Amino acid sequence: MNSRHLLRKQTFLWLAALLLVLTGLAVALYSAHSHYQNYTDPLYSSFCAISKAINCDTVAQSPWSILFAIPVAWWGVFFYVFFLFILLTEDRRNLAAWQGFFLVMNIASIVTLVLAVIAVTQIRSLCLVCLATYIITFFLTYTCWLGKRRCKEAVAKGAEGFSATLQKKDALRNYSTAAGVFCLSLLLLYGLMPRYWLLAPTETDISHLPHGLTEDGHPWIGAEKPEITIEQFSDYQCFQCSKMYLLLRQMLAAHPDSLRFVHRHYPLDHKVNSVIVPEPFHQGSGDLAKIAILAALRDKFWQTNDLLYALMRNKVQEIPLQKIADKTGLDRNELSAALLHPDIAELLRRDIWQGMKLGITGTPAFLIDGQVYQGNIPPEILKKVAELPSGQ
Image (cartoon, rainbow, N blue to C red; front, side, top):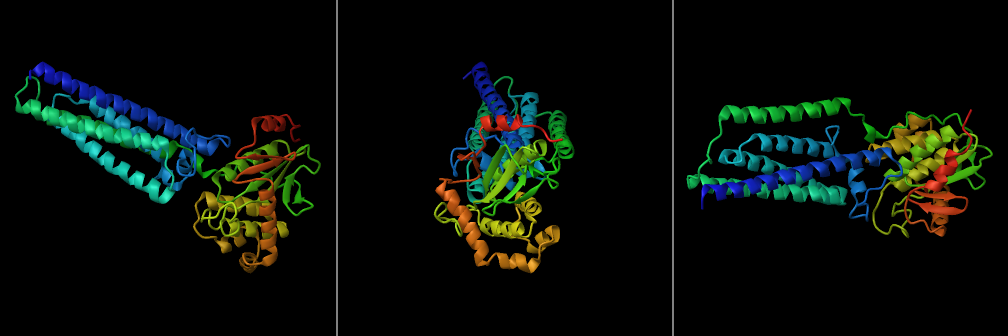
């Protein structure tokens, strides 16, 4: 086999690696965009939000999607940029270069395996975009292994143009430059990127708006004589419920004299909603709803509602009753008693039963002018809200 043929084969493997890196970079950029949209656009739903088991949004919304205050997708973006740099600067005819590529990809493969295990065991949902990244990583690792093997064979045969060692200074400079840019980019991202995933409702204040309880006991806020009333069936452990609530806050702030928002409880907790959720899911959301019901009876619902959503956005594992008491002014002992109080449990059962009668199977769900909308408020309703008179 002549040197020209060996070089063609090695060039083919180098081009395959380059194509895989560019594809991985494109996928990582899309993943970063999707992660941002998940937290900033209440109406966003990714193309692979297919089911509970296959759902990119579930993965993006999990705490595992952030590593050291940087979205995991951005780690992927900078890794592919790093690898692209060394791929373009190292000689594809050098065995040591391919050995370096293969070592880097082995580390990437280990990280990929860890992320896959987390998705299966902790998040319990798979993302098709993440799966594409896993496949690209393993194919790139395999391509680098082939490149290393072919280059080793060429060196062993004494093929012209192939060598076994790198110029150490050049290799050190290239890898140091790539690693330095990688670390500097991450530091800049850490310092400059807004923490959009915290979903903090700091921009709109609705505490001054009229509020009360409807005739059937549900907390409302907004216009006393509304043109449009939106009732939301919510679960405090539902990420989308939290996003939609933040959107509704903005809508209420913009149209306080013509829009009313009503909160309805629909926790997807098998302990209180076993017909819709027969197996463990959103455990503890039933108790959170009971705390909110007590808060409504004590005229402290909306500040408690905000706090409960914030606690769940921060993935609090246990309900901090003392913190809730301190933040809202509710009595700590009364909060504890509410979790077992039969009257509060009955009010929650009534909400759940009404939701079931309406055919609601998940959250968030909205009741507007007698029509049920599950998942999102349709654009035509949002347009009607936008056309309402603005607040003074």
